Length: 345
Image 1 (cartoon, rainbow, N blue to C red):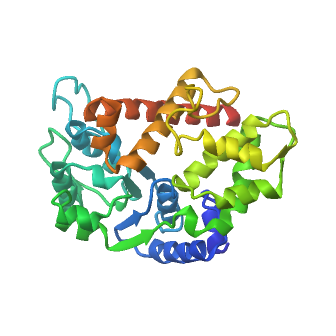
Image 2 (tube, rainbow, N blue to C red):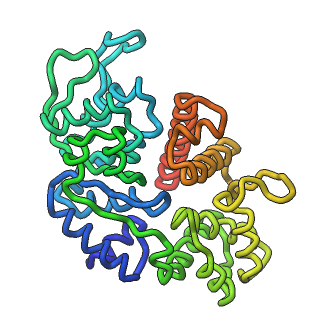
């Protein structure tokens, strides 16, 4: 299997020069059991790159644990990452093995590591230096063998200069660096991505008709600047497929309508109605609202550049926003797991 085929197996699609370069970087980094940082704009597929690194490494048969650092409050960060012993605090009725220990011999992916507080960064640095974790309330450390892959859409060098990110941790995680290209630098991949997302969506809604994409629709997609990158393209394709259920083709007018109402373009549609996310038949109300909340957060986070500013715009405190996002992501994860389990049965 060539490197491009290996990438497509985790959902990374593309045949542009930028993606060929990315494939070579991943293949090289996968053979080095060193910490790595994946950089790039929001929506470029940083977690997919991390999964590809894991799948092509010698740790492929072991766990891959993904952690969204921006969705865990500072007070919970230590117990979430390192676990706790029974009696460590009120409510700790039994020992909890958590994320680093669960990833033993495998890979842990720390998404949005730039959102970590300085205090949490100090604890993470110690884990990387010592190769051991100490659960909250424990008297001894537990040795672990974990490869750490981090990701951020921030410029960590600037964060170091501003005093928001520890310099020693920066050098510890950035042994290998991979940058995911924005969609505007790989527009030749749009037809492949369009076909891939269209097929995925039609399967999800159990459509018996595959819509034909007219040339003017593809031209309209090429002409757009894609501030939300591949994630935004996926959402737009979902809206196109669901919004043309009675048609056999998708034209430029349909593309323009989907883009005009997309959350990366406007917060409210012209008639003031809720514009986020198309409803997919079979989704529960909670699923729809969770997806809509994630879309709104991703859009605002991409504009503001920080979780704190996003929370301010939404008029909630940081901790409350963390908790709401965490609940939504957990529900969506459990929904996906249950759906997969049902399909196996």
